[in-house]
Length: 239
Image (cartoon, rainbow, N blue to C red; front, side, top):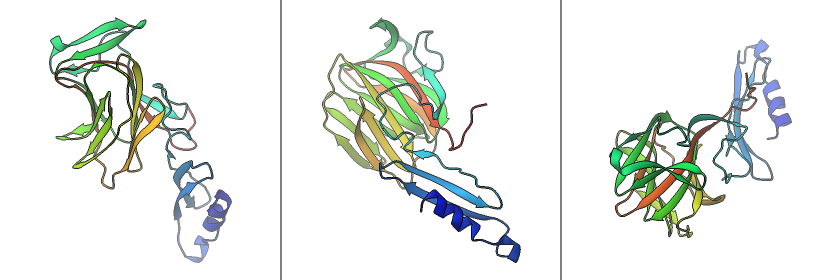
């Protein structure tokens, strides 16, 4: 259905004759470019779009760490003023270092960094530089559950509960990579440098949780420009 057809469908319900006081039509739509949306029309004299853009941009992944104009920034950390918002498994294994003209967070050995939150349908974006080894980027971490994203020189792999998926796209060492992880409408996506590497439906997605950086044994990794971005509802107007 297109928008005109959906509005016409809603107008066909005559609540004055007792059919219903309020009729809600929920829809899922896709245009020829592949851009998708979901929402609702409430038939009682008003049309109320409620859905989120899915994905939040017609071009996903975005290849950037900043939030889009259609998103709200929920968390940001560029380490220019230290490590506020983070807790560490070993304070002596994590350092803020200056590299390439800005500050970044460096982890070495098997160590963990946590940013507490209760984030649900969001995009998690960051810059990652692998000096040696690999890192796990843990998403929706809560009560022992998580989406484990393994990011390394020889590919990206994800564990969704007991299901493992991945790609073998090469990621150069000593180079900054933009990594984007999102969960929207029961689909987990991972993009690297503007390329979609993983797209996997999860019919029973994990509940909201925090983000967790895990550097693996024998590894040294830099992180910077970390953001959590939440899509705004359709029709949102900034205050």
